Length: 249
Image (cartoon, rainbow, N blue to C red; front, side, top):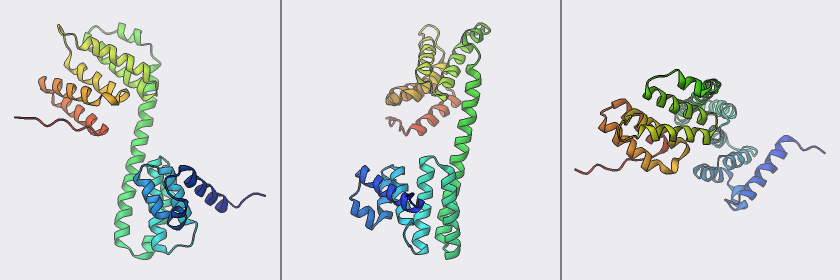
């Protein structure tokens, strides 16, 4: 006999909560919203979705339903399912409008902006990946042969490395970035711009070396007095959550 989707969904959600073993099952059953919030705080978005789904499968006052729905929308967004996030957002928005809840409206407007930003970032990433796939169709040796300037060749190596990384080809990206860096770090004829950009490229595949790569890149960019390079290093540091060491005078 086939289960009703709602019953099946609730059973799957409860099973997930038990298997994850992050909360006592009694807590998930008695207060699934609290369980979902804790899962959300711990970064387990799949578990948070399951907990909020359990809550929403029961009879809730509209105020709690709006809260649980908005929290599930946030969980879907962080989990990468933007379509499901918008479905929940619209339902939460309907509820807060009916409740005439200005605080809820403000919070949901903020969440709507975050979903929009996530969608824009995803679209940009997909466009970048398509562009990178197109770039990789051209033979690298042929491209290098058409260039006379040494720095242009090194820049092409870095661009190719980033293209490989965009397409999930981490080892190829790392190899090209390291090749560019070794040549750019030549003590006789260094190339500061490539020294910085190659390190930022390597950071994408070697985040464990963030301190070494970013601190060195910042020092090179600063010594070269290149504001654009300094800004690029700053953006990379921000995206990885790295904080530069304090400067002592």
